[in-house]
Length: 405
Image (tube, rainbow, N blue to C red):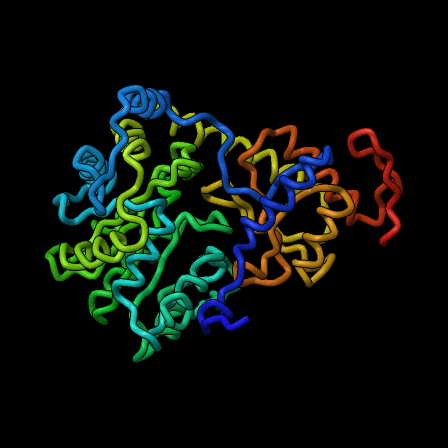
């Protein structure tokens, strides 16, 4: 079969493939514990569900503008003023089918073949493939100090004459690291001086722990005119537990938003009106669900870290936010893909290999499920890897004997 160069170069999403495999095993009755997903288990806000139901009952489900309905744009503008301290016009906003599409159309609007896109590692699995879809080159930057917190020096060393864009994701998927405000300020200033686009992927913006507050990149931007190359991406998937609604947005200068709208109009047109009405209601409604989710996740993180603390040989950097921990398991196996397959195959625990996020030897473990799942999942992992653990265990109603150590 003849495929395009892009078709041959793009790999499948590791996280979506894992979800599919875990779901198949679970459908067969296997006692799978999914510690690999990025989906909160709480319900979406009631305001969102009521708004969607009311529109559905009306029967007025029609096409929407390619860049979003006025009601949702109004809600996003208000959200931006409240959360970022920055005012935007409707022409500075595009609503997309998730934050992923918002980033994708932004890259398509600014990149030419051969351009480079710089982002810190570990990184979200889709960034490199998105760059390849634009015939651009992804450039991952591993912090020299071995932490999950890049320095401006790390970024500067990776930027060259072909660099068109930098992507910053804080809080970070997969590490949960919240980058210091000094770093965000320095990157904003650096991009303005070098005339480089800066995409701030803020999808986990409000899921931050230990009393920390999110950083507004606009606070450190000197250029707030229509020549600014700052792009801010956010959405309702994570903070409102509305993953299946697929609604995100981007904020940028009007010329760029117009180009992104043109691209999106030929890809998918505007997001579903049902989804947009629900998102608008979530943004404008009671915000207690976000606080409740954040507190639940913070507690789950603590449970996870306490349980992991009983394992020998692993290295943990405490997550500051999101619902992921990125753990160094290289003591047990430096091949994270092989290790993840072992855990799913032998003890039915799903985790994501660190190599997919640009750092081998690590596993991404999600703690957005229940605490009982977290405890049992880590106990199974420990049994699978610790040579001092008993040689037998019951998983579900089946006795398993460890014969691989």
